[in-house]
Image 1: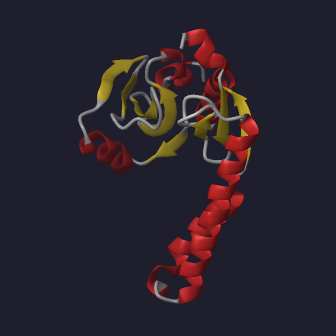
Image 2: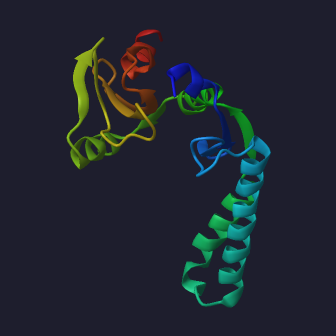
Image 3: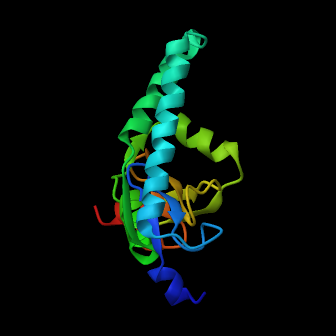
Length: 174
């Protein structure tokens, strides 16, 4: 499959969770229509809701009831959309990079710095910043920054391969 063919392939997307449920052609032993994949996704969700409901109603996991109730709410909130893989790539980027940066504590910054060796750790525009090695998807990960001039700390999802999304770029514009 060429890159252009891949970008035009249809995918079913779990919209609230920003995840691909499945490709319509390459994700199955035989090609499926978008409607068949959409129905499979909905059926899978309905089965998960039923299983989780049974777990809650059984009373066997009463000490974990809060966890199971949150899982049930998450499953009930699922919705699916059909789009091309190219549209998915744009959707994913927008959903992951749109949230604003948040101010964090020095302790949060140091915890992130010490959990794994940092990626792209450097100082740029009076901002010391690094990316987490744990990727959310592709090149998307959380970046942490220390603003040297103000002594403030920040975090945000960025594309570690695109410096225009980095905190040093965002903070330099403020």
